[in-house]
Length: 245
Ligand SMILES: NC(=O)c1ccc[n+]([C@@H]2O[C@H](COP(=O)([O-])OP(=O)(O)OC[C@H]3O[C@@H](n4cnc5c(N)ncnc54)[C@H](OP(=O)(O)O)[C@@H]3O)[C@@H](O)[C@H]2O)c1
Image 1 (tube, rainbow, N blue to C red):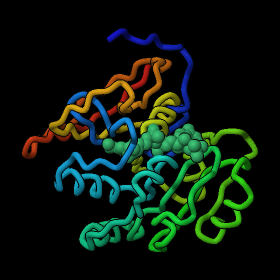
Image 2: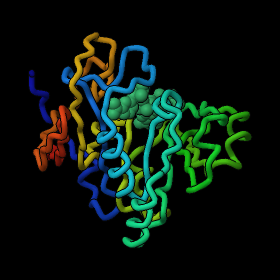
Image 3: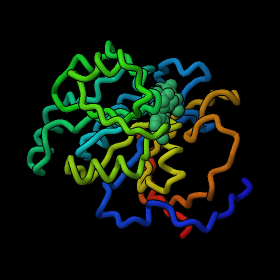
Image 4: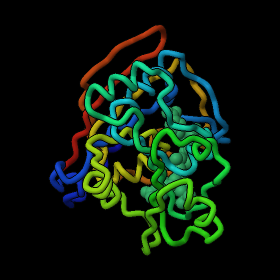
């Protein structure tokens, strides 16, 4: 693969980590690197073990982070069904459920989604004043709206707010690809938990981990392998991400 050159710019990851939470992203992908099909339809291509793994990774953070499109397609509640995981959190001094954080520039988040039918933990939406008024009205009593005047959400600022105002030390990012890429471009992902599932989807329109964008990242990101486990036919990898200074 051609190597992207470092821009030489210092990214926000160089902002002292104590001012923002650690960001750990968790994804499953096929052998050919696809995270879903080209239609983005919910597709179940991983095992029960992988689903448990996702919940375990979710259970470690004070917050779980998701992009608007993944939320809309997968219609997840972002809970923790296993009482043992909740008890472990409480033993660590965390709330039983992580704070649920949704990111959207345009703010057209369907208030009828399952996540808004549950109140086991607070929901915070980082969006912009582009969110249409009717969505603001419908979402206001279901979630805390953090709307910025800018056209796009400033992810680095969002993480600083999560740290300083919500006491979040670790964020479990569950994608999707566009959000992951945005964080990666700003050098804001610290850990990647990756499951490789035994399938090949093919198709240039099916997104990979960093989406369908044709362009390279501003600089290639070095992934240091921390852990490798195989369970059945799946491979569970954990990488620590390192960025060019
Ligand atoms: N295999 C896996 O592990 C895995 C994991 C996650 C998701 N997926 C799949 O991936 C597909 C969705 O992928 P995707 O790339 O479209 O999802 P995504 O990143 O969840 O959603 C993209 C949307 O999120 C918002 N967003 C993303 N980055 C943002 C940023 N920097 N600032 C503000 N808002 C931002 C925007 O919302 P607005 O348009 O509202 O502005 C954007 O259109 C789904 O099919 C899902 O099932 C698979």
